[in-house]
Length: 154
Image (tube, rainbow, N blue to C red; front, side, top):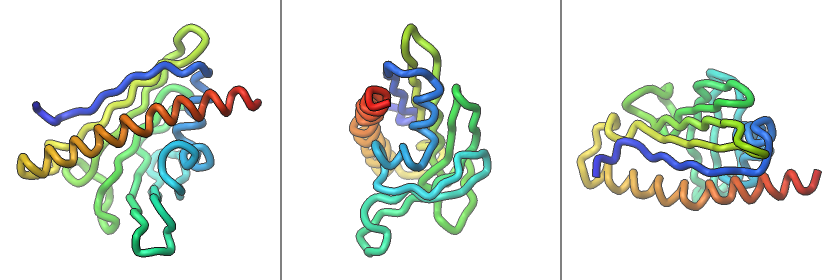
């Protein structure tokens, strides 16, 4: 296995505008992905994804930098880079959400790259790649479920 890219595609019964809002807005992100988010969804913005209670030592705080934001079709960011370094090729993962109108809803294509560029030994590369695969397999269905609940409550 080459461990170069993770790609997932899902169909969500909501407009690209609604899906874009849910994948880029901190108020919505924390409903399906991290426990909390500090981020302005504009290119160049730097923030944090937080799992757990930020005030405790057990919290996982992951830096995130928005790369591109083109509502309602594209949102991309770099994440998992050292907090004291700017996100760049070789120190972070690159995630892109591409949204395409499809029938009454939206096809979401999520890709994550950057694993090979980290310079990890094979076992470490494989462990990180597999961990991210498991994460996206958990969180992307939650994205779809949240959007459906959101749309039905409006």
